[in-house]
Length: 113
Length: 113
Image (cartoon, rainbow over all chains, first blue to last red; front, top):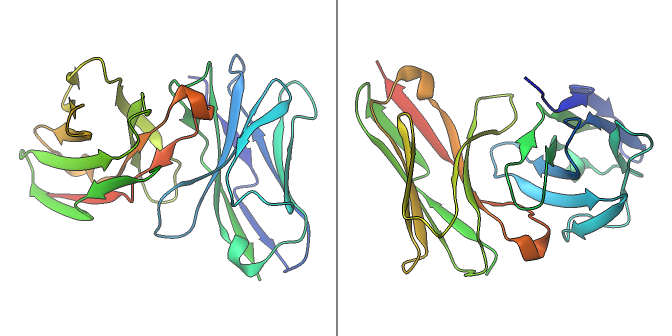
């Protein structure tokens, strides 16, 4: 069964460092998303991406964040200068078309120390 | 107006019982309402979803009831099993917002054997 794959599963980084979280969406999907979930809280939308550009972003997705689809399979989230409050689970998701089933990856647990 | 309110925060039922989780929304532009199941350390997994043109959708032991006039929808889990113990999130999205999912706060379901 096709699935969204995320790497690494856990990343520990020092405050102020740059991190790149990687995702391989389901191959025939066209819409890609990043969400985050702070421990014990609800899942929050960060950004959606379609046709090699950002479709929408939330207020969380400030200038420290960027997304990229560097090739035909990968989708990345970069945090330029990590803060302690960036510690969370980051989930990548993808969907075939707009406003339909979105499938989530297993997540990357980011710990900023 | 983008919020989705979910209740209860936690729910304990006996094996074989019915689990009911409720969600309410404000934005009438929402037109897609999925439910996700999340186990600890895993990503949200799509369980079942509904659109506002129907009042009920059933898949196996899982049923969504949708009340458009009340702007409420609920998940019913029939014959609840210990393996159903997880956190359940309702969500909502709309085509106009690029299908960003707005999640409820989550319900931690425990099914006792």
